[in-house]
Amino acid sequence: MRVSPHAHAVTGLGFIPPWSVNAGFIVGAERTLVVDTGPSSHAARTILGYARAVRPSNTLLAVNTERHTDHMLGNGVFRANGMDIYGHSSIRRTAADLAAEIEELNRCISQPFRRERGEAAVFFRGTTVENPNRPVETETVMDLGGCEARLIPTPGHTASNLSVFCAVDAVLFSGDCVVTGYAPNLDDPTLDRQAWLESLDLLSSLHAAVLVPGHGEVLTGDAVREGIERMKKEIDGRLNRL
Image (tube, rainbow, N blue to C red; front, side, top):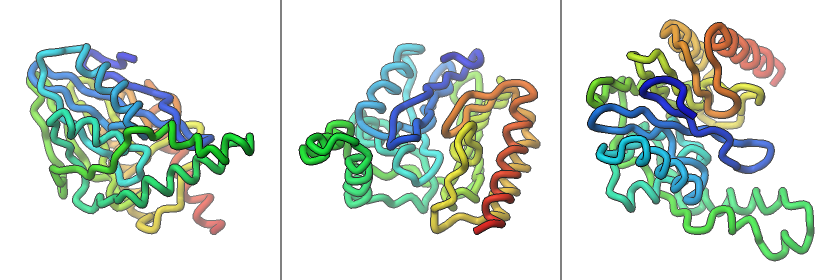
């Protein structure tokens, strides 16, 4: 969906139940920046098709908002097409991580005969693990031609989280720093509660008009601030009970 003159969201890409995941892209006059490549090669081709269709003459780039595989398993499709992928320097996933995702999805299949056939592999067919080839350590501004995209470190959910802000349209792609509807995932070993709360304060200070979360519905207007505040309460409340 088009969420602003320059920004588009690709929402509801299937993943391991109950999760679906979002991606999107920002279109300048010369370059298009894809935000997350999706949870599989199938999803990546969908995202890539949309991004190319909006402005076919543009050079395409991509960024991974974090290390979790639902945001980066489409990287292989983008790298095979010669596209650079930006991401935090700590992102290092392996084929073993992909195998674990296939196994987890297979366990979610209710019919025994389908589990025995290993049909979860169909979801990931053609998917390979490719890490970002353009490491990001600090805030990075990308000139897309007529608009800029800020890659902003927002650690907490993981140490690798980045958010992407299109200032000219006040559109924020938060990755999993903010999710809507879902409870935040608190399982990553690099999770840092205080860093996450500080990252949410930083996102709030951007005064975004549109927020595309890592998972869940796109937020607009007052719902952006409300969604960020909800995340603060969720993180505080659930981590205090652990």
